[in-house]
Image 1 (cartoon, rainbow, N blue to C red):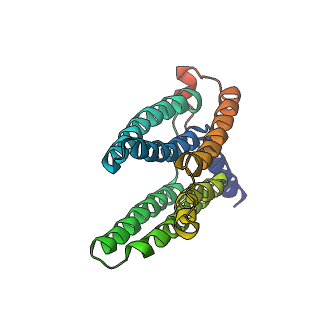
Image 2: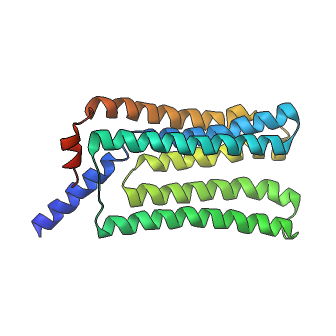
Length: 216
């Protein structure tokens, strides 16, 4: 029994190392940052379409670049990791949580399109749904992936939309998008860069033989 417990502990530690590089944190922060840039573009050009397209384009580039860098960075330093059955179920549950967040958003927008939610109600409801959704989804990721700092990321990610929308709706005061979205994004990116710096120092590039034989 003790041996099985030790094995689970070792697997947990090995898995957590793959989220200690900080690249995913930087990715999350920059994704939030693309929303700030999109909002700025929308204000400058007075075109919502231009804002959405710029945000989408930057997001695609970020996904491709950062995920490619992260994969190569981890493999050159930690080798490959093959999670056990319990860990695989947790990863699947994380993906389901992310899918659920998308479904909730689609349902809400569907209600708006069908006239089920008024515009005024939407302006109040959307930021609250955004916040709750972010806290729940990132909380699930923190618990299922054993990465506690994702709880903080969920709060920061969720705070952005209410900070940008609610002051304008409730008090007729508009918080600039670069502050409302860029502020939380900057904090997340700084956390990621701190983790990345420490990761690069603690895990130097390994030889091909070491990387091949590193799988738990």
